[in-house]
Length: 438
Image (cartoon, rainbow, N blue to C red):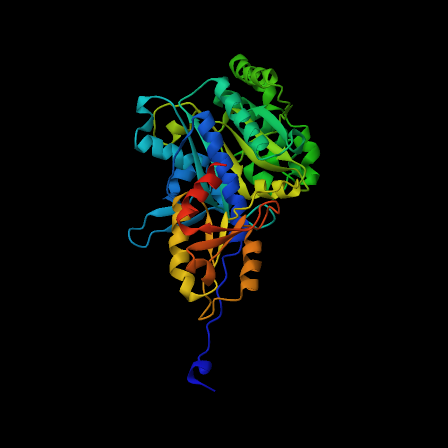
């Protein structure tokens, strides 16, 4: 046994449970999705913004609410060993964006529409479509108060769903209004009275929330509590004329474009900062009803975080869940196949192959060149198998005889109607330009 064989290899490490690798076979779908999002944001005039993954813990305690599930149970929080600062991996995106707008006085010149692609972190039990590290498209309209902007954001969601190839029947829109603080306080008092009268059926979680955040009891999935939850007072009955007018204006805009929706008086959101319009896009295609996109208006968050009064509305879309839905609906994602695969049979052909491939890439083509494995360049048969597996449209064969004549063989891999021919090396760049513009 050699000395090298005696060395014990360390055990391989694995990713943290619920935090997943996105490998090349899957990243194609992500890139396609991200391209659709970027195109949509450009159409609607939304600018990209990027904020840190780590934020002060106080940002989420103040912004989301101390008694929300996220703050109480799900945040990855730690103390900075250097200075003792209390920090948190962001569990959601909106609070960080608002913090950035306040810190940099970004709205000084007026309202702003922004979007972000973010990684978020929540310590919860991993399951299909719910992970400890997950990704989201976050969209915010800042400094705009009208119901027309609420409707715009909802219609943006619909436009993206259609751009992705989903049918209107694959998801449904649920809509509600959370009114204003005074209306919610009156509703809250009524909720507490209702649940106190049925305290014997409340579970421990509901009892804990009863006086701190009774609205969250409406989200309970406990089947034993459902009759009491269904009988609870509805916030809609406490809304004043202005809140109702705002909701009705949003509805009128959606009606005008033929977007169907369902008023769900029990619809609340997991963060405390919402008011007035809230909405969710829900699908039944993944088993139980699952929200893939949700949002609403949050007119008080800027003040909660120390900023000037600023109206705002936004939404977030879970990318993992959306990709699962696309797969379930059978929507095929285009593959990122190269235009050309360069077949290089020997080391003698390498210099010419490298120079030609660079010229083709400069002309705008995607080119994958065969590379030597060890000292062997591989047989022509093996290389053509790899060329076909790559999905390339054409193969360029840098054979010794062709190169001696200053040529390369052009072979179509995807179009049987294109005849094989020899192409002068000096004309490959022109051929690439013609192919790109065809």
